[in-house]
Structure formats: C-alpha cells, structure tokens
Amino acid sequence: MTLQIPAEQSAIDRKIVDEMFAITPEDWKSILLAVEPRKNLDGGGVAITLCNPDVAGEEVEPTDEMRAYVGEMVTFLEREKRAWERLSYTAFVDPQGAWRLKIVVPLPD
Image (tube, rainbow, N blue to C red; front, top):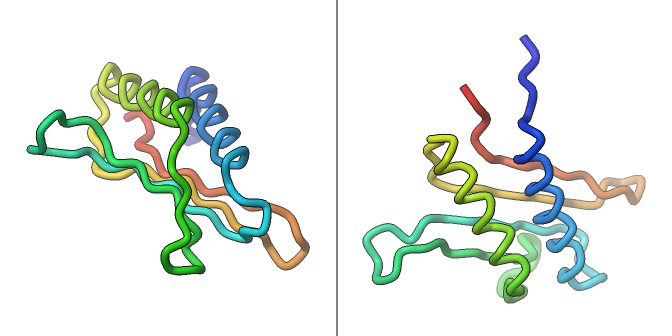
C-alpha cells in the first residue's frame, strides 16, 4: 500500500524546509528543526528549536516566517485530527556533498 501525502501538507513542508535552509548558517553540515507543543504552559503554542546537532550550543532563532509556517502545519494537523508529540525536520550533508532530508510529521490514517 502506498500512502499519498496530502498536497496541502507537502506545500507546508516545502515552506518550512525552504525557510530552514534560508536561515541556517552556510558552514553547518547538519540541521535539526524540532517542534514540540507547549502543553500546560501559559499561552500554549509550540517550542521551535533550530540547531546544529553536531555542535553543542549552535542554534539559530526561528524567523517570523518560520513561526508562521510551523503554525500552518499545527493548524493543518489539528484540522486533520492528527495527534503529535514532536515534529522534526533533519538534514545532513552526505559523503558525496549532497543534502539529505528526513521529515517526521504524522501521516493520515
């Protein structure tokens, strides 16, 4: 069985990934964008972390655009009634010098 990712989800993923690469320092060879719900905290919302997983303490502050795109994804998942605990977008440069990407977002049932 082949599962088709909804076009709306793919479009939001693309915006998130494009912004992730736009704000990442050029010398990074690995990127982790993690989104976690801020449960039971004042204001709710999500926590967004954009870091270099290879170097402790190397982080980039998410832009307003990134926050908006993540908000689109959260709204989309809520509308689709898809539960989630963490969303992640991971990228790294492979030995041939090409970027590889892994996206972990709940898929439709």
